[in-house]
View 1 (cartoon, rainbow, N blue to C red):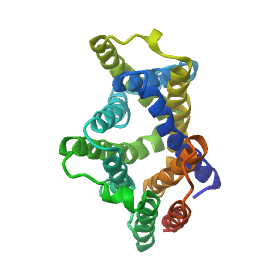
View 2: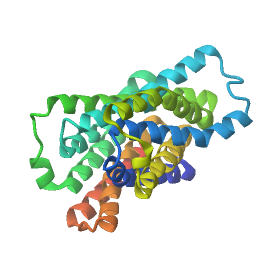
View 3: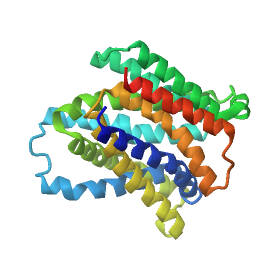
View 4: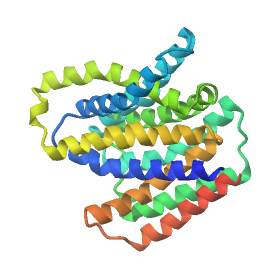
Amino acid sequence: MPTRARFALLTAAFLWAVSFVAAIVALEEAPPLVVVALRLMISAMCFLPWVFATGGTKGIGVRRMGELFLLSLVGTSLHYATQTAGLQYTTATNASLYTTTGPITILLLSALILGERITTRKAVGVLLAVAGVLVVMGSETLTSFELGNVKGDLLVLVSIVMWGLFTVFGKRITDELGALRVTAWVTILGAVTMAPVGLYEARSEGFTLSILSLEGWVAIGFLGIACSFLATLLYFVALGMSESQKVGVYLYAIPPMTAVVAALYLGEAITPNLIFGAILVISGVALTERG
C-alpha cells in the first residue's frame, strides 16, 4: 500500500474516532436525524464549489448518476439513519461489538463481488485486529453485552453491512470516476435525501436551529467538515490506491484511537488493555496490508 494511502486512512480513522465525542455533544442538543441531515448538508456545501467549477454532471451519464444515487443511499443517508436509529434501541456496548464485523464484511463482499483474494495473511491479520479491538474494550464491556436489544442490534448490523457494500461498490466506481468526484456526488445526493427527513423530525419534535449553542454548532460542524467531508474523501482516495480488503481493515484502528481521545478529552484512564490491544490492532493491520 502506498504511503499516501496509509496516511489518508490513519487520518480518516482518527477523525472518525473523534466523531464519537462530537456526536455525543451534538445529540445532547439536537434529534439524531436532524444531526445526520445537518452534517451531510454542511459536507455537501464543502463539495459544491468544486462540482460547479468542474461542470456539474458533465461526463456522468444517467446510468452512472443512478449508481451514485444508490451508493449515496447505502453509504450516507440510510447508513447514518439506520445506525442512529439502532443506537436508540440497543446499548453502546452492543453497537461497538458489532462494528468489529465491518472489515470482515468488506473482506467477504470484496471476494464475492470484486474477486479479491482472501489470503492466509489477510485472514490472520483481520482476526488479530479483531482480537485487539476486543482487548481494548476489556472484559467489563464484553460481559455487559445484552441479548434483549434485538431491534436495535439488527439495525446496527444492517448499517454495518451497508458500509461494507458502500466500500466494495464504491471501489469499482472510484476506479472509473476518481475519488473526489465519487465522494462529492455521494455526499451531495445523501444530503438531498436526508434534508426532508431531518426537517420532518425537527417539526415533529419542535426543534429549531436557534436552540443550538455554539458548542453544538462546533460539534455538528466538525461532523460535517472533518468527518463526512474530509475523512470520507481520504477513505475513497485510499480506496482508489489499494484493495478494499486492505482499506477496510484500517477501521479497526478507530476503537483504540477513540479510547485515546476519550482519555485526553474526557479524562478516561489509559489502561494496559488499551496499549496491548492497540499493538494487536496495528499488527493485524500490517499483516493484512502485506497479504
